[in-house]
Length: 249
Image (cartoon, rainbow, N blue to C red):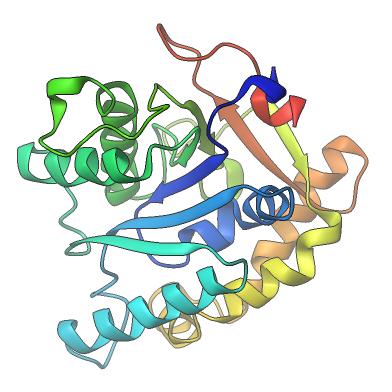
């Protein structure tokens, strides 16, 4: 199966700068090391991620942090530049997302789960699921189709704390990726988002976002007998690919 893939392009389409570094960067590192082209995209600009800076300034800071983190693995950073806490699955934002996928034509797509701790994440889930289905339809965009464009393998990353916020139940993954050898590089990527340490401490009461990321990775790793892992649920609705490409890779 993996030998027949036309395009080795992976995209994470998540809500905010640093989301990818928390929930799927280890997997992106492994894909990059295997020769895949990597894109890290956020729907929001991160403009509410500060207790002191105005929106335009913090958005500029967070964009540079996103670019720096992506550069650690020779990835490309993108943002749809929507405002934080106002991410909505509507026609204008859906158009932005379709055109983004039209340009990138990913084979693998990572996004938020249907249920997560904040609605920005849940709205991005809808955007990613919709555009994964539609971007390769010829009339879906005025942008030209990249050869090999097709419905991608779609994987949902863990919600925060791996728990469904509506039931508090731990999410049961379909796929685990061992990131034990990638954890130090994942830390380096997350550390690029230095502005978030003060923000999380002030708003969330957290002063160790890197340590909390490591704890979660260790918990998922323990479930598979490895030091660190990332966990995913594959979308297998019609007409999405049914094989577990991550497991095969």
